[in-house]
Length: 207
Image 1: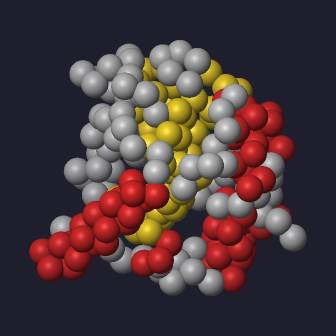
Image 2: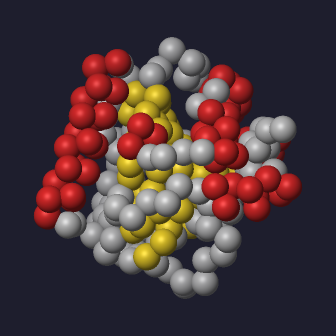
Image 3: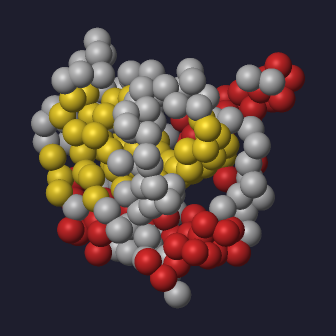
């Protein structure tokens, strides 16, 4: 049985200001949530880890396979009017957030699209850790949209020079899966190596 609710992509609203993005809910089927919560990897390192650096098992591994599959890519392609199938993907997983994360940025020019699927049961923190769609790099306010990082929320956007986003600092558990569609295999190799090197540094310096 599938964990991804593909209907959520069709039902989500696509916005075009200040850039092209989609925000939806219930991207995870309710009957799969308990299994996904229990099988979420035991990650102690902060930041995003590639799937090759994470011990994935059971329902969670199947969930990642679905997110990386052609059906999700096709759903996003239709909603944004761009064929994402030719682009290689990199999938990363975060469980632990640090205060330095969330600075306002656009994502690098090697990315075509980024999708985030959040997996937190609830989010009682008022502002911290809630990604915001921003109008500029200058400040978190005013913002165009705020993304609740709760179970099954999906946020996807086309990378652009003005695709500013970020969140106010949060320290603690913040579960999210990120898939990025990249322009080339060379970009994929470079990002994979960079991520692995960053994890080595964190292991050495503990940050």
